[in-house]
Image (cartoon, rainbow, N blue to C red; front, top):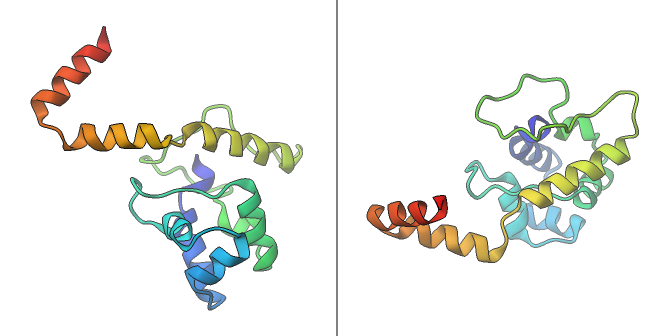
Length: 138
């Protein structure tokens, strides 16, 4: 997902340049302040990404270009998750590409149940994790 590798930093910079608080940006996008904080999070484990509607709200309501938030034409960060088959084309319709991007982002988002299971898995002992992994391999 090379288009979003520095989104959190770019969004924070945009917000600060426009002298907006997280609450201000949240209000512009119709979301909670905590969600804007998750969009700007430096920690990949807690980082979230806006949907296409929120992304468009950010651009339109701050008079910013999509290019200023997304990483078009830059080198891929080796630690960044890639979405195979998802690429923007200069010849295609950006709406279709953004729709496809939103579908991929939604597909990758953990459900509340998955998030709770992962949290419990991480907190358990290494022996219990090993047993769970063995059970899942069957």
